[in-house]
Length: 189
Image 1 (spheres, helix red, strand yellow):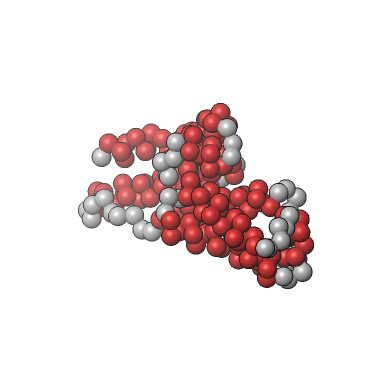
Image 2 (cartoon, one colour):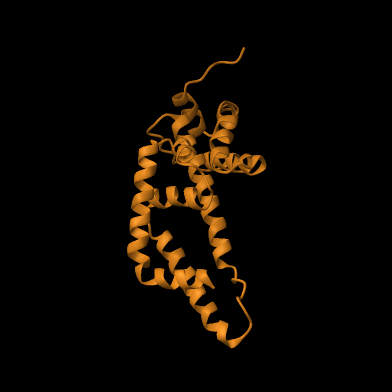
């Protein structure tokens, strides 16, 4: 029969470079981290990779690790951050791609430049939102998650999600005010 270790004992073993510790932590929390990440990114293969990366990072940082909360909460936060970083990185990849031109004619070249400029302003404005506000906004608007799903994934209340969305929309209106009429014009074409 295998000994039961506390989180504190596991972290001490991990710090001493004991491979048994990472193995026990992996067995105890891997499926939990996959479930946590799946709430944010519903792709089994991807969440398995992201969860494994959390454990790899835990092993890599074993000598300098500072866990001030429970190990489960620490790993949960790491999995959520890893999933959100993946979403952010994918968004950056998509926004770096050249937009498909509206038309090849000279009359539409100006409109395409305006559309490109507007998209750049929107991306910059979203990126400049406070971190929690940006995360909630991206999950709501780009990942089509409901307020309840976001609340569950980030372990916050639905009211907090609502407040963060309101704050994001207010900040985006302020930042994009001069460009909103241009956006309306381009959306009609």
